[in-house]
Length: 86
Image (cartoon, rainbow, N blue to C red):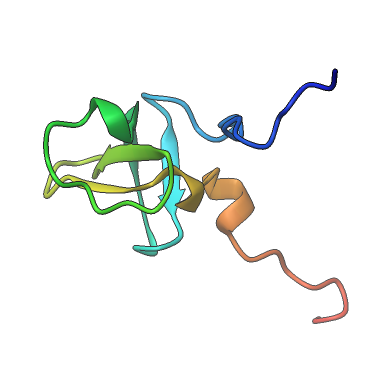
C-alpha cells in the first residue's frame, strides 16, 4: 500500500507572522499578521488557495488579505542588478 500525498496541502515556507512580507498580487509590502486555513474563516474569502494571509502596512493604514501563495520575502521580490549592466 502506497501513501497518497495528492490531497496533502503544500507546506507554507514564507514569511511568518510579525515579519515583513511582499504581496506579489497587490505589489506592496506589509507586516504579516496571520495565516489561516480558509475553513477557519467565517466570511466569504474568495481565495483560490487553502491558506489566506492577513497583512497591514508597517505604519498603519488599510489592512488587506491575500492568498498565501502570493507572499514572498521582500529581499526575494526586489530586482537584483544585472552584473553586466554597468
